[in-house]
Amino acid sequence: MVQDVVFVLVRHAGALALLVGTDDPDTLWTAALVLAGLDRDEPPFTDLVHRFDTRGDDLPADERLALRHGLPASVVARLRAVLGPDLEAFLVASDARAPVSVRANRRRCTREELARRLARDGITATLSAIAPDGLVLQGRPHLPSTSAYRDGWLEVMDEGSQRIASLVIDTSPPGSLVIDACAGAGGKSLALTSGGRNVLALDVRAPALRELERRASRAGETIAVRRIDREGPLPSDLPHAPMVLVDAPCSGSGVLRRNPAQRFALEDAAIAAHHSRQVSILSRMSTLVIPTGRLVYATCSVLREENEDVVTAFLARHPNFRQESDLRLWPHLHGTDGYYAAILAMPRADANRMS
Image 1 (spheres, rainbow, N blue to C red):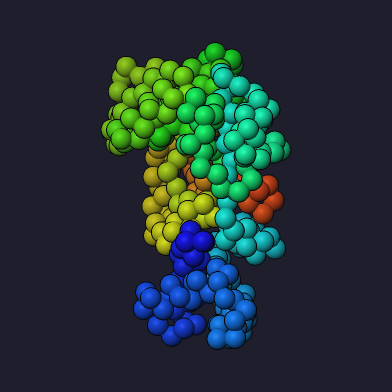
Image 2: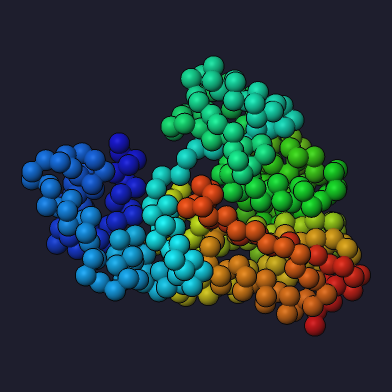
């Protein structure tokens, strides 16, 4: 119950302050308790519930949606440019709680075997339709207390994130080297290794790489890690690979249902800064792709400025790369977080030459 109230408060703090006429924390907490389900139908609170449910009805469409979903109006306009008539469905889905999904560690089990083992702990799981190794769990079980988790049979991972890893696996040779250029704590690195690829995980954050090593140990995997500097030339001794994954830092506009506080960071200046940084990172990491290799660019953003516009800017600077395909996943259509991925191929040996 406490988590539900916190989620309501984070998502709707601005609207609640308008409705109750104050930003006093205790008053907002009480309002959030009501809207989360406690005493919604009690007479003292029915007026608040009605005003909340009809908030913004007298405003223009984008202002109404901004108020209802706790987003800046400018961001709602950016989302409308991408989503069109699906905008409200996306926002409603992004306000919902994300389900718990896990990835079965192929090295130790199939997802069917994992589902049976979880069932012995009273956890119901269904097969993911999006991710070949994925399960979607019923409720919000405490997985670290399960033997399957302790034995490295599973990793908690959104179905959309798993699908991006599967895309990389499907477009790289078995046993080949994949450089995970923005590896973080290693969710995709672990999935790639489980899928039979050799992984070199790069990141600028040493603590994230230490967490990756801890997770790899529990999963029984071996992953090479390397911390790199945020800027400047890449180390000359880094290998080149037939596949480089750039899961770039982004606004997180696709994961609002999982990280509702991320909406506070969705500002125009921040989005513009992400775009510049993403183009720079993609250009820098493209130098690690071997001739005829591939570069996969991915984000957990749904904004065009961080996705298609980044790819367009990159291709303008690297004309010997070409885009093979792209992929979009949506919470309101696929039940996943919002993700984007593009496969960029380098067909000629001189493709890393800047124009």
